Image (tube, rainbow, N blue to C red; front, side, top):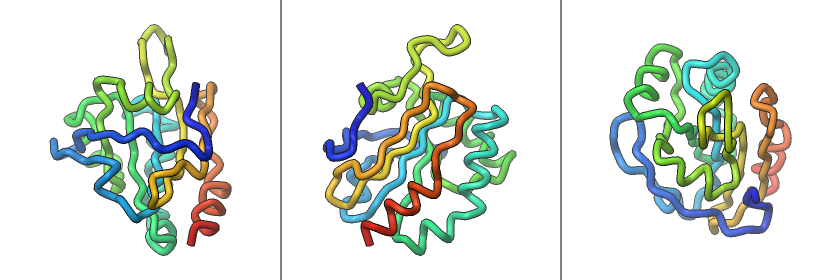
Length: 155
């Protein structure tokens, strides 16, 4: 079952593209947008993270930290960010534990087990989920207007 609005956000510690540990707790007191995508170097995932990177100032103005998460290795995430100009922090859920904890995982995706579903969660500074969207259709982008409206309501 997917994590729901009102739930305490599952905590995590993941490696970023520089092999540094990043945990949800690092952002205590700050609103966080978690964006799960299926796979690096794919068209829609690249579009999503490039668009978010291009509009990162809007998230900064709302006092929100955006984190991108996929089941790819930190090394592929680094290459992807460098190739595509993705500036948001990318975190590797290679062990597939965080996407499972958020209920944002395909049992089978093109023959691969445990790939993250395209999902978005807004976690407030207290660690409570204030927005949740998990899509069974990997081609459907999150509703970024709803995410921004949620962030504005938290300020």
